[in-house]
Length: 316
Image (cartoon, rainbow, N blue to C red; front, top):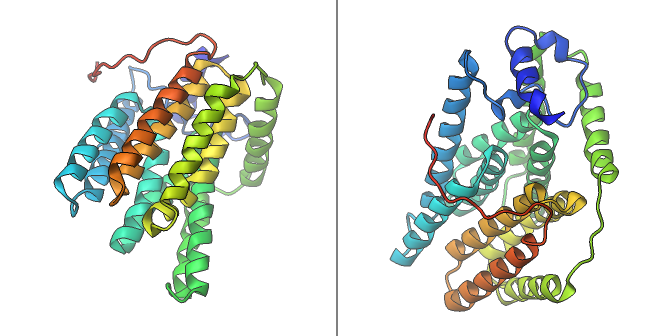
């Protein structure tokens, strides 16, 4: 049923939103942003949305390197180029959410929280995958903030900021449908489908534990050798729950389309990890390259695997 989805969601958003109020599906009412069609304003709205997010992702990565040494700029530029090539819309949104929280901790600028809050709220109306993972990252960020409040590092009044997210979720629903009717059913249905859909189509292929086990072992070593560095430890804690969720998302079907999402997210984590590192850079880089290589070997065993096409796509 995937090919007709493009027409369905573009039709619904063009003055027929009320017809989709009771549709319970892993895609939300704003899924047309994933499937733009020519012949309406949706195409240009989607292009503008994609362009804005990709520019903001690049800006966020370069912002992390703005006060660093020259080699950090090289990593930031490399990360920007690679991620803009291999990312889709959903991963771009999730990565911006993570980077916004990271930059907040690095720069202590509260304005960086608003892109994360807005995208987390919008994500639930695009697709369950990005909605759930964005909320997992935000919940992890909230847990870190609560810890910092008890440690005396943050004002407890800053926790009130998280009320912005349910307000925005409600606001976006009301803007779409005019009232709050159906909101609870929508979220209950999305949560149930997100779990049951994966279980219904799950495959359990034989795992090459020499490759997978080596990758997990190197990843744990990479975390342990940097465990005393607050910035890297905080980044690892912030991304670990989302990494597990995306691993489950990729492993549930074990096909290239889903497994590659996990691979790209691992690539993002390792690039930012090296961008944030101040010491042991050579060891971190070697371990990261080994991890990428091992996970790519695993990716090649996914169903209907094909090589990444490193091309630059234009508007047309």
